[in-house]
Length: 74
Image (cartoon, rainbow, N blue to C red; front, top):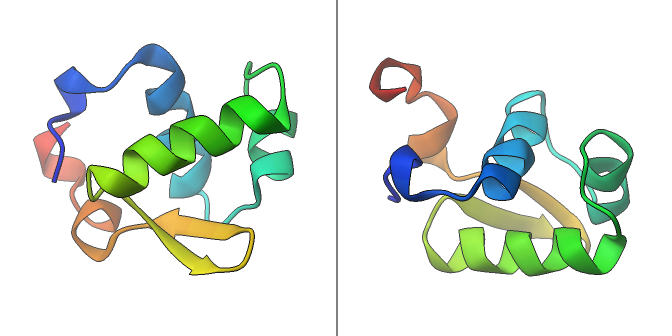
């Protein structure tokens, strides 16, 4: 699990969108300041490698189980 202080501002935006529920990269772009679907995919990949995000299905992402309920640490 990544420390929220170690996340970039854009990664924090991605996590914020995913706190509302599962999302596609396009939904993340539509609900954040990310400029493109490619940018969203890049941040999702980095967050997935850090264990913050999980790939639910092709093109669909959600918060990892331990991140979804970890509001106390923020």
